[in-house]
Image 1 (cartoon, rainbow, N blue to C red):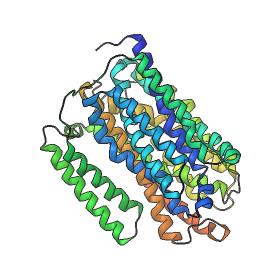
Image 2 (cartoon, one colour; image 1 turned 180 degrees about the horizontal axis):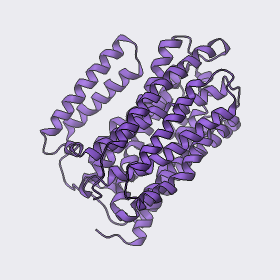
Image 3 (tube, rainbow, N blue to C red; image 1 turned 180 degrees about the vertical axis):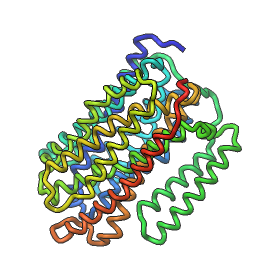
Image 4 (spheres, rainbow, N blue to C red; image 1 turned 90 degrees about the vertical axis):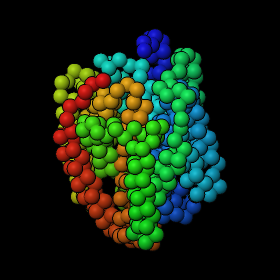
Length: 460
């Protein structure tokens, strides 16, 4: 279907603004972790739930919302999810206790799940394939722009006005995005309008993710191990149900395509290997590095700034290259080198070494993200763009959650109940960082190998 230039621009700008919102909020809160921990007297393990609750609900709702948007319409889902994010922000701002903050973050995660899937899907629907790499590159740039500005804005405002009002900064952006798409895109895209929604599959999938990831985040507790195993068993049951359901929640036949499967695995491994870096850096720079939130924020801007600068370039380059898997494979290899450098951190690591890590990881991510997304979305027929977008988003968010799970496991195992950061626990915290990033490096290597041997996309 052909869309007018006005409609294309409306979708592009609405998606770009929405793509900026959640990473901005996410990275701003990282610089508030120390202050939140002091206000509510919680340690580093519980503080990890500020990110993990967001990621957990985003993974739980991504696949069901990806299917639901094809039934009720992608524009409608886009608006609903922005309103959900806004509601979560208000709850987080007014939170009277630490666990109400977690509730607000969980609600934001649910709304963000829909935004991530519908944004990528609707952009793919309206942009011709010859211009798709560039559009995805700019969308990726907006994500990284949010990541770039988040630490600086969050650090400065955290010191100036406190962490609560940080939640409210995204509200004007959410309403701007709603206004743009409602005014400029008059139609609707519903690939399965009036279709049947798989309620049973949604329940099994959501329960499986909750048990599996909830268990992983709380290892090595015995109950957590049982929970993780039960969740994995339910995931296998979900897959079985999808193969035998004509109205399946997720089209499992997509995974028969080698390129699609390999690209999805590469996405998971890339984020699993690197997402916890921002969590650790926020704590490391403000505790061991003795920087203020403002100073740490300015330091942490390096990685996403590099990603923001180079993502459009690699997006445009993807449009011109014949071998579409070359850029993401090289990008992941560069990310692996950056991840490995963290293993050598100590209590007196110079800031220029930390900066070098961020440059490497940022450049590797920029080379990986948009080209890899192009390969995923170009490996499936147009009628499956929503489900492909959902899979890509789930792999990304699942990788992030596993990354936080790795951090939480080593915090629990090495620091135990002494997880409040102070001079007497700095050596233990360094051990946590080292073991975490040795694990992350191995995952990055696996992802690089998978990326190199995934095959060529069909370019639908």
